[in-house]
Length: 504
Image (cartoon, rainbow, N blue to C red):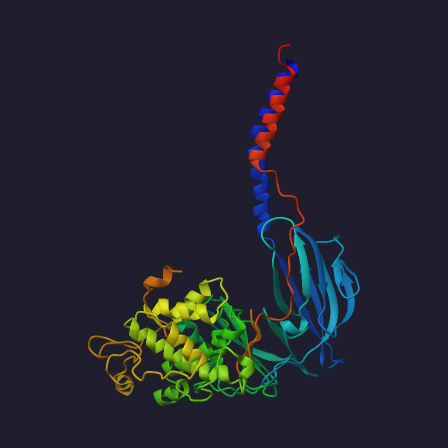
């Protein structure tokens, strides 16, 4: 009977302690959940090797990561590695340290459809993350994927500015403006001649920041005015990230205001299929024209000409391989978005706009296809626009109604009165003062609770940002024993003890 009592006490202690053990393990897992693989690319210039930069990639490896291997970019020369062992074409974590690094040199000079965007010269270097990023694979033991969070920095002793997706190394001036919506940091290299003055640039970006209601906001956005010798236009290394590049010669008082266009890309968080990539550029260009007009930098006629352009009007936006020019997505894309915006406004008496569509797409985890896009436009408009949307995107571009708010007052008349042609009132515009939000109505709309691409201002979006083939092929850990299984085991032990000690 003594063994019986001991067994019972043992089982009871297991049952009592099991919840606390599981709770402790759960708390440990919760702590692990906040750990991620943080990667820093520290860029250093090599004056003796113009055209190449030195990069030290430092990776913090969380405890729950069980295996990690990386591959350096093409045409790199590895100088040293710490905590990594070569396996031929890759470098594998040896498990000896929770911080590893690899130093290598890499060529700089990214080109897009519209020319060269980055460079390394004898005086300065402009580098984007995709040029230097490691390709990584990893396994982890518990919790969600630890992720691969990359940032860029300038090497100690060098003058420069680092951002999440780009760095400039060399002499420069940084002008900062803090607004209620966040900080805008304008970086002007000494090698760049800024066409507009800094106040105008900060004003137009700040107004765009205040007027944008879609996508994630950022505490700070860095805009680098690239030297005039690089390609015209602009480039955002990764949509949704708070870094943009704009050629210093770009003006603000034009319908294709690149400063605003690139800012819009920093707020784009939806992900498109190849056939819907045009939406990223078409919507950014449309809102660049709208916001520049709202800011009073262009008149209505210039705005109207931009959003009603006939250029490439018959192109199929879903088939980039058939386009005669990469400009198709900007020109026809702008007109399609402008037409859909007006149709939605008129269908909902101004209660909803195309920005509502973008917000819904941004909140969805689904990839944006033509079907999802048409379905979302219809849901926002409150009527079936599926056929209209498909025809607009794949066939001839639709007309853009001349009276956006449908109040019967011409846009010219509304502008003379100082009212907003995109917002109707019962008094035909006498009291509809210009909205401070270009994206949508100022009040929170009732539908609000319903349910990373390289982007070239004058180039072609290339889908997810090149730079890391992130994969997490299954977990190698053994999952913890469920509570019910522990209880069952205890019950079996008890039954065995009672059976053994039964009266004979």
